[in-house]
Length: 425
Image (tube, rainbow, N blue to C red; front, side, top):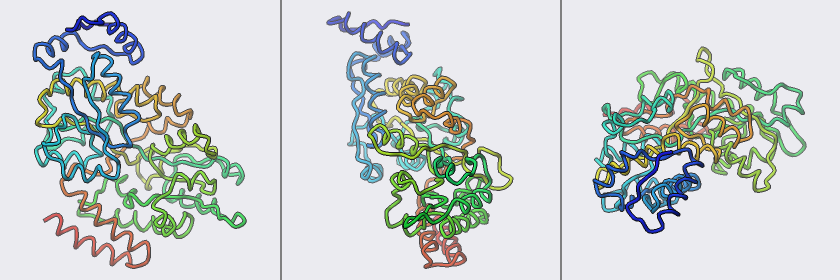
């Protein structure tokens, strides 16, 4: 383990002991050459301000605390924006905020910051770094804007199929594995039945990505061919009508998906990796959670098994950060293997992954089937395109009207095509 020569000698022995302990826990030590560069650059006493949203606080705070312990001071100061206010914070951000590092929720936030000139390009820093970017997986090459990296992935999302083992045992039906969407529809119908005053639903699908199966086939709302998008929405309507908790019920309760599954009357649910973390947290707090398992998300006919939808969450350095080298050193830590260990111990899937990280995550989650997350072939939920959020908003609002019967499918798609052309012009 490498040793840092601290500028301040007061309590030096205690600081070195602390650094050794943290290094053993998190398996890292800063490169001595980098430390010398920092001292010569004169920023070893500067505190960087890092802004995130509240969903991230539990694990990001642990990463920041580990980094600060290694530095022997408050090298990074964390600021937490409430979830409900974070989108507005991004929209209204300006340099007077004084952020040095910003947490960004998916591609759209990266694009919004980059288009206004608020993010520092990282390609040259990455060239000089020893960070193994191959550990970010197959989505990494899709996050550039004009061949430049403006943010680094912190964690990744991955949609899978959750199922209630107890309901399948009671029905005498084998647990689900990899299926096509048609096989999933058939299974959901078979699992749907009356149960006294309360119905058992074969499935539950949050209405966040109505074009889910189109994305699995590689089609986005930008594409000229909207056939796969139409087919995906048509399938969603069948699911809500025949075998899933009705869309109207989900809509009224604003996707209360976790408590709904925990009630025990939903056989299967397509959802992201965050649901597994919620189950673990609820179980730890004494909430009854049915015995559950994880299977790959269903795929369209002819699409490679394991193909699903995913996204990165990011951290970027602001263009006006006075010490970008120090900020990048922190990103190397938080977005690399050291930070990944901390994320994984909290049952959060980091963007950076290898066999060790996978084992840590599986132990934290307590489910062997969590291998599904790491074996999936994830297709980016949305491209790095400036106005793509506007397309999503338009599509969802019209899909909502279709699913509640206010528009036919033909009317819905014609209206979307018209609105899409206005956005694309």
